[in-house]
Image (tube, rainbow, N blue to C red; front, side, top):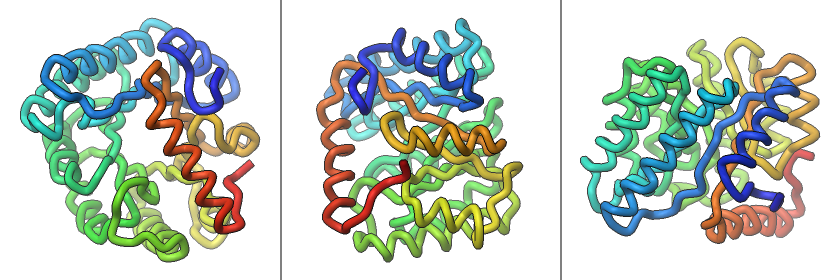
Amino acid sequence: MERWHLPGLKQAVERCRERNGQGITCTLTPISEFAKDKIEAKKWASEFVSAVRAAEKRKLDAAVGVKLTALGGVFDPEGALEHLDTIVGDGERRGVAIELDMEGRGLVDLAMEAAYRHATAEPPLTLAVQAYLDRTVDDLSRLAVTGTRPRLVKGAYLGDADDFFDVQARFRSVAARLITSGRPFSIGTHDPDLVAWLLDAGGASKEQVEFAFLTGLADRTKEQMAGQGWRVREYIPFGEAAGAYVERRRRYLANLRALGRMPLP
């Protein structure tokens, strides 16, 4: 196994079974970069559906993560939403939740449209929201009228803030709003300061907040928190086209080292 991902769906399913045995929920995430045409978008849509069906067949405690760019969201937004309709519909029939990733700021409106489109999905759709965007607080207010569950992340693309400590402050501010709202939500961060704040001053509760981590990071933390009764999720990327994904992970660690920091153990 490469640190950051697994080679295929079979290995991802086995990893998820192992994590489920430790009390950790999973999200199976085909590593999908930008589809170049409608043929490629259709191929990726089939990959996501295959992951949904594998989760049901193996009775996994797992969701499936989807990227709109893989479905053609850049060049064919309506076609991407139609592919998502198929994936979410299959998930509803099989009892498998769908999580929609948030990508560059140019995709935010389309992701929000997807959330409205699937406001009645069951299991509910999860949508990532990025703390480093100015619009996120307003987007969360709009999402509140849907059944969509937010997953708060710092943001990995080009945002409205790029200073590490500014983004931390934004993250705390948005998380505090979510905690006050009483809505269930997920937190996606490997930042020790933010997790410590959430568990202490932030007032996170085991009933409201889920902590989500990537494969290859925070393994000790995942197991400890799950053992303490926290809801914990591991994102399991898989697939052969992992070059760009792995490079983002390496760049993330390099940026932390430059700041003299480390992710959660």
